[in-house]
Structures are given as structure tokens and as C-alpha cells.
Image 1 (cartoon, rainbow, N blue to C red):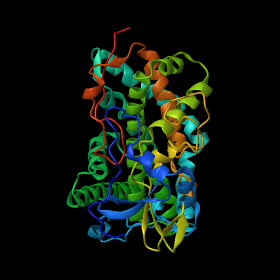
Image 2: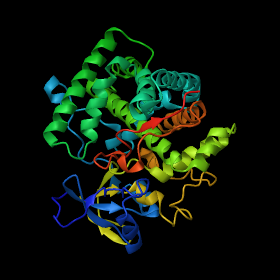
Image 3: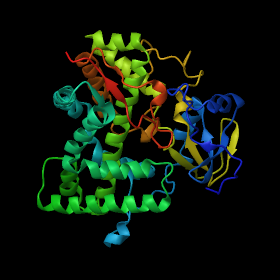
Image 4: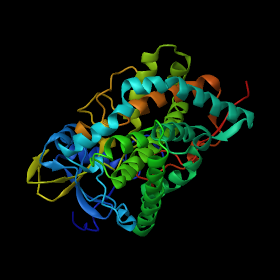
Length: 403
């Protein structure tokens, strides 16, 4: 990847405050103009891939690699080996490591968690209601649910959630310096490396302990690899779902007819379809799926040279008229299961089944428990996360009338 021309557009582009659920307006022109678009992504000149079919090509062609420069883990400061990160690996090595993680995210495992997730959602709402008739929905509800769930799955003490939320905030920031990110990365690595050592001595039945006791003795995994992949799961497991709960709630408040259908239905298929459409419509992961060409390849009529980087413009792809009709409308009656909110191909989000379950529980539970939920401030005062790699709202002040 090369240093970008200062005239290149910065990616991702800011979403328009007048239409905060829509992708950056320039993406429409990028899709229509044909081919790929050179952009400045995190200080690198890369190709933005913005059309649905072009992303499918880029995410499945073996000439395109996931082995872009990953964040340094600070493993060297602990005298250990550099870890292998499954999102930054190609098959067959990627598949081997991914299979070690998947058994904790199967449909069967997630379905077994649903009653516990529902219990959490109701308890957080109980706490909100006990505290009055207003709250920041992000801090009171959207963030705690996925944070607690992923902590339980991994075996990370939830009492430490403030630390990993703070660290993730720095690493996801588009304005934090590289020095800030290196310090944050080292801090969370040190925390998880020590947690791995503790779980060697005091095992439990959660994912980190399972990895330690199944794969550390065989040499298939190192402590460093367990620690850093645990952080990837921990970070993604709360950051993405929390922002979908917050932004999804806001989108529904701005679309009251759709909100009422989700609130009043007893059909799980309606809820499931609504979640899929919200995932497509909002596409909060807007600047993280990076790739590099291993050899020359043509994508969408553009020649990408070996060594050049690509960034997958998922929000643009999910609003591509070639993918579905009337893409800028929120329509929970259509089938959008083939959207790209979780990526595409072999690197699709490992935790997507869990994320779907959390959304299918958190959104209708909130709307049913607080049927008159509404914004406590005008929409214009909401702070949107254009400054972060994962989109959403920084806060969501809401109010309701006590039952």
C-alpha cells in the first residue's frame, strides 16, 4: 500500500446528517461511474470496491489476500511469538484456526443462550425504569447486553468491561494517533495474556479455557495467538451489536409504522426479517474489510496491480440497485439474507448467528416493554459515529412514560 495523493477522497466518507442512516452520498456516484475508486484509507492509497458483484469477486478470488498489515500486538514486549490473527489469514491456515473457534458460535450453542439473553434484556430494562423515565440507551441497554454475553462466552470477567470498551474505543477511532492505538493494543494484549495464564491455572468451561486446554499442549496455538484472537472476538462481539441495537432503535423510532409491526407481532419470522433488513439498511461496518492483491487482477473493469490494497465498501454494496430494488427504503417484508453486513465469503463474521439472536431479542423486548419509547432530544442533536470505524450513535437519549 502506498502513501495517498492528498487529492484522493478520504474513506469512509461521512454520512449526511440529514439522512444519517444512508451511506455517504458520494458512494452513489462511485457505483455508477464504473470500476473501482482510488481513496485514502487510514493514510494508504487503496482501491474502494463499492458494487455488490465486485465485492463478491474480490472476497472470493484466491488472488486477493486477507494478509494485509495487521496491528502489532505488543507480543514482543512479553517475550512471546507474534500471534496469528484469523481475520488476517488466508485458507487453508485461516480455516484451521477458524474451526477451533466456531463451536462456541454454532446455531445450537446460540439458541441455548437465547433465554439468558432475554433475561439480561429484561433486567437492564428493569434497571432503566427503576432509574426514572429517561436514559442514554447506549450505556443503559445497547452496550451492556452484548458486552455481558461475549464476556460470558469467552470467560472474560464482565467487571472489566470498562477496560475493553475503552480500548476498543481507541482502536476503532478514526482520529486516534498511531501511538494511541499502539498503547491501547499493548494494554489489552497484556491484560488478555495474563488472563490466559490465569486460566491455565484456573480453567472454566468458556472459550478461552477451551482453547488453552485443547490446543496449547499440542502446540497448535500459542498463548499469544489465544490472547489476541480472544480480543478480536471480545471487541467485535460487543462493538458491532451494541451499535446495531442503538442505531437500529433510532431507525425504528424514525419509522414508526415499522416499529409498530415489530413491537406488536408474535411471529418470529417477522422479527428475523426486520433484523436482516436493518442490518442491510444500516451496514455499520464501513471501513474495516481490507484486502491486498497477490497478483494482477481485473475487478469491475479496473486492473488492480499486485501489492495494491483494496477496501470493501459494504454500505455502498448493500445499497446497490443491482443487488435489490429500491435499496434506500427500509422494507422489512423483503428477503435480504444475502446482504453483506457481515462481509462475504470465507471471512464472513464468525459471530453473526449470535449477533442476530441478540438483535432479535433486544429490539422487540425493548419496544414491547416501553411501547411509548421516544427520543428525548431532537434528531439533529444526536451525535453520530462518523469518527469511528464502526458507525452508530455515541449516545441515544430516550424517554418513556412509566407503565
